[in-house]
Image 1: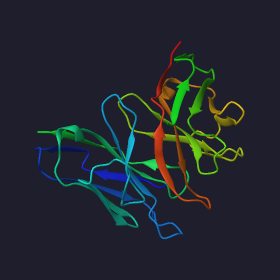
Image 2: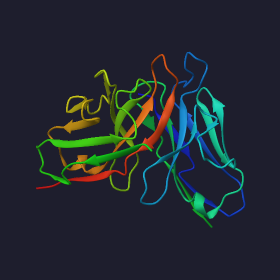
Image 3: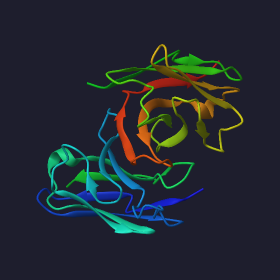
Length: 112
Length: 124
């Protein structure tokens, strides 16, 4: 199985400040088509997860442009340029490179 | 608008079989663009992928659950189902259904639509 490791696991952020979450995979997520099969999801309290970023760097429909994803191979980063109160939640990275699909442990973003 | 809705018993006894159905509306489950998936989340914990099914019946399962899991699809009813046998308290979780696409000739699609989730508790 591909192991996904996120850091930090807890992220207190002042509104308006940037935030960054790291995700590392135990194997390369680069697929034969040249894309990295790495997604980012956020789960807000009491809700189902929702996709933010797919294939490492593509913003999902309706996602604000303050969210960006980068990285390749085994190292990936989710960045929020200016955190807003509505960004509170648990952020997960997920690999879709091969079954079984695996998720990171989750990073809890909170507002200071 | 696409909607996925999980349904099934909220309480299952230990050693019995958990059965859930995901009803899909707003899209055909026979779409060649998607796999249909089950994902679960124990209370206060992270996400665990259970398995996927394509409309043709092709399945992928998490090896950690493979001996106890069956995912099936009924294209005539536009729904797919999960059966998890020999459950224990460790199977208590919110179970989500979702759609995505990977590992084939088509374009990759993330889990872009999820059901609201249904809590299944395993207890006598």
